[in-house]
Length: 252
Length: 205
Image (cartoon, rainbow over all chains, first blue to last red; front, side, top):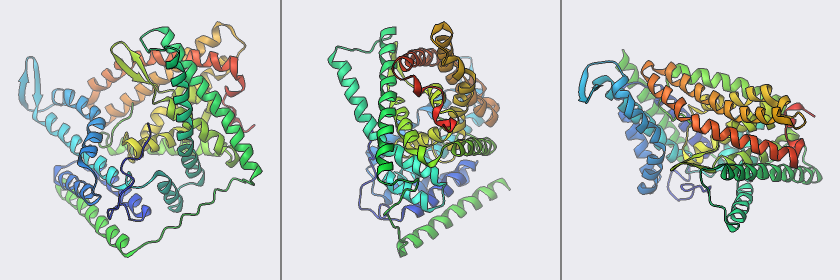
């Protein structure tokens, strides 16, 4: 159910300092998200494709991910060309598609996919635990980091619990259908998950107190900035600055 | 329910981020360090439960559960949902960095509202009223979320209006299922472990 498909590998991107990757990911997505012109969006898409290639990620898996996430975009394509006001481009029966609508929809598509590719190339190539520790060192609030790390840690435990419960249901002949019995069974399943996780939380909490937990979560991971990191960071920030300039020029 | 990256305009994103920051800081203030492991285990239970697909006719929907999350966690559902959404963005690329704020608000704010509206009613001893409240809690939390998603789309661009309307309509069956699931889930919890309900983690007790 939960696997980190892209987090292992031995490419240059995988060996980068996670803090560098987080910084680049944040700057890149913010700049691309507020851009509104193909002059900067197309280079952004090219840049994110380059990042994927640099990470030596399997194109098939990346494409599969993109397809899953693009469903909302597909949905927008069904509407935007017809609801956006502008010059008529084509007609399907009584519906009139506008050139501006098509342009706007394709802009959103490029934007969305550029950010998605960059996220896969930057964040998904790092293990979640490493990301958590790196965020901690980048001065994210302590409590959020603790909550993030603990939650990820227990997702695996709870999902095992979930599989045990669902297997037990299947063994008793449970077949999900559209009826009240199904919904009630699922509701009890959720309820049981909550009860078990509540009990588990109590045990974990007590065990942690026994081991002297006083709210501080110590980490053993130390990150060091290498020559490659500095090079990567400066090249990427320069490229992102380039995107900003392109966008600015296009507006002016 | 997630809005993807690149769809919303900058003002909407900034507003969402600011509101999320406010909600999260209230939530964090109410969550002491010693409570973090407990809130985290509950958050991961919600994360796993929201991956359950419930059949409806030929199709299926996945559970949202922000209503019951609000009932259990109160204001803490802001940090809880933030973390869940961040993990979904990293693991499955649903959502992303710039939409994290607005998505958190769209999901967590209805949870908090439902906590204030229904927590007392749900915790009353037995009776039809508490069951109705539980159903309303599940139904309305998804309904509010749908409306918030629609609002964020329409504020981005007027021509999203028909998409926004359709999104709310399409969520109608989800609302009903979510209501039914919340009703049974609350009934179950009241019988098995009543102390879980009522936003205990958020009360500082």
